[in-house]
Length: 424
Image 1 (tube, helix red, strand yellow):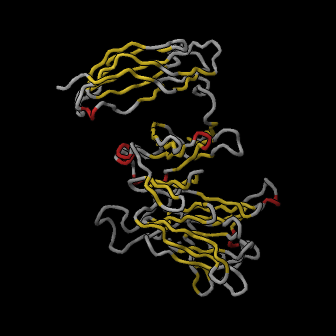
Image 2 (image 1 turned 90 degrees about the horizontal axis):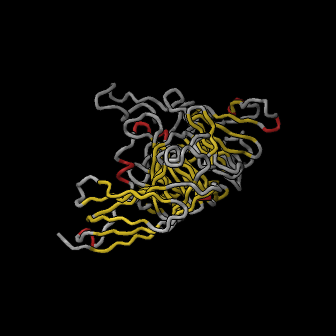
Image 3 (image 1 turned 60 degrees about the vertical axis):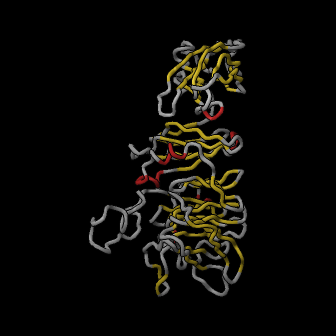
């Protein structure tokens, strides 16, 4: 959960004004990290800030930055750490403020403190350095931040800010980009080639110089079945070579991640499914993405099998389609499939094309026909008549393909012979 304190529980729970300060003891144990040169700066949300020094070797541990020799007024706690790229300042979001030249030890959720340039140990603002701090005004707490081109984007629970290096005497400037578009969780924003995408409380957005809503065809599906009390577990991810961004989240009936939603920004399509992944690293350093769940490290997006077992119950299903906004019945009689079976020299893969129909929006879909498709299938003859139709492409390697491994298929531009068939 995000934390405890005023506004978290139901009305009347706890004494009036008895808010609990943000700290590592009442925060979901989220860590952020960033490089400062060859060193690594890490921070537990609401807790201390640590530095691992590369020159000390792989077997050494990270140490508390504020107690390191030479540290001067370094924040003792924070909500997130991030470094600015070109000018190289260490930035602590939600730092504890100074009082009489000493850090208070309590998170100030709207305060941003930054070090002197090229010196992660110097946070005392002086005329001879570039250390300092600034405070955001819109919202009640900083939720998260990501680096974008020539700026750092910072979200509170209600707004988005741009933080840019402007040089002495102010060092950094912040601009309020927009309000009412807060970040749903600290890990719910991701940088992609098209811009920065993030999940808010009831919508998805992209920033590429300006804020735009991402039209979402599955918006109601996601936000009507999401556990907002576990919103800090949401994590965004990218699959850059497939032009995709996505989010893992907890459904309304779960306190752990069990669902995902993905947006393909090249084809402008959305899809969703069930999967548990609590961390994700896209391909780059490694040839394939890496992901974590339940203590296991996974290699993602490789092959067509399920950890050495045949993949079962794989499908792609369209939304409802009709002719003339459903005023006329649609008649379907032939499908020319466009499938490519890959990584199987015997070409013995099999895919079913399922036609589902319904006459009224409130009706349940009923299966009209199922046609088996192989690599050499030229066309499938079907007969169906309804106001609305759905096409489903499905395979079951364990059953239809006799447990064969290494069978994959790719769906192309399937053609459908349809025509109007009167009104009723």
